[in-house]
Length: 118
Length: 118
DNA sequence: CAGCATCCGATCTGATACTG
DNA sequence: CAGTATCAGATCGGATGCTG
Image (cartoon, each protein chain N blue to C red):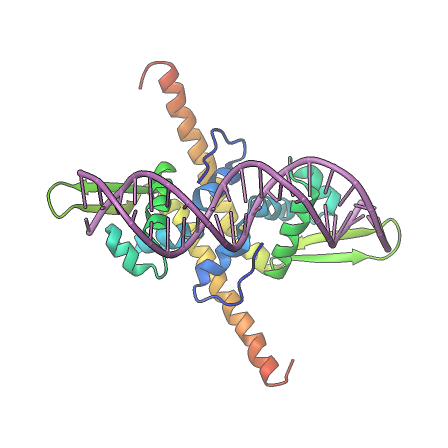
């Protein structure tokens, strides 16, 4: 992702920090538990390794995620939310809630439509 | 923007709904007051008319924004947040808060660095 | 297991010009 | 004032193959 040098608008900064197809889901997964790369790859359906690493690195640059590397073989790392990451996670939670409501409402409409009630 | 037919993940749905360079700022502006197209264009620095209309339409499709058209000349419209829009705005608020904190912290570091304290 | 490099099609954005 | 159409460049995302 192209990263900007400077921001004048705080909202733009945060939006940049969580934009991209997979960042919200990565944060969501990490909020459940710190995980390894392969752990995340299994818990996030459909993500490629390239995208996972790229988005993780961006989250690290913005200070939402911390990475710990353990010595020895097999190689082992752990990704975890930082304090800042936990703060932005509150926003992710709201997004999740609203998303659920939207899906329920839309499904309701669909149901009524198929029954000829709309 | 490419719109998906179906969503399996609520978070993905909401993220799609607010993604794009300008959507968070548009929602932010509309939360202050319902506005006309030209009003928004003036309150959002740097946005092109095409992007503004495009993102507004996407926000309408996702049910975050409502549009009212008034008859007569000169043409007049008004964009406003819906209830759903106000819910997602809570997430935007958190994003704004975190963004401000990030900017302050980063600036703090910068200050210390220039003073040779870091 | 963790991570990088490259290539390519899909998508996003912005400038410009035009319509009701 | 509100909105559409088109086109070119930048960016993003996914598949694949390679390294420590």
